[in-house]
Length: 90
Image (cartoon, rainbow, N blue to C red; front, side, top):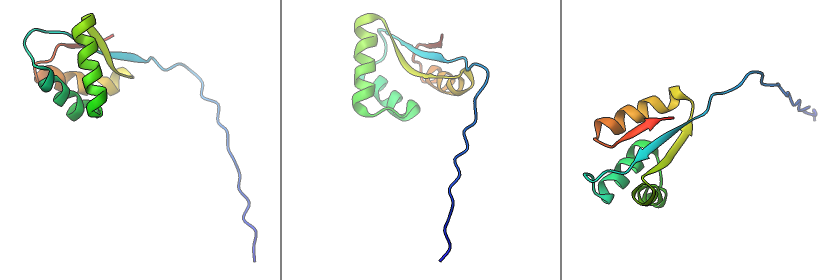
């Protein structure tokens, strides 16, 4: 029987990653159910996460719904905008 050696490689990441927020703004047009459905479908939120985001946006005027790089968030922002939600990347 042969022994298998495991080797762990640690690589240091240099540089910085510019993390952004995808912000959902409250509006007086879309229903809670519509917003929740969009967040579940486009952002991959669970129903509970989407419901919490919709509630926070309603009560506070805005809510960070996703974090990531600009490149990761841009397609989500574009699709949510196409669906008539008010969003921006900050």
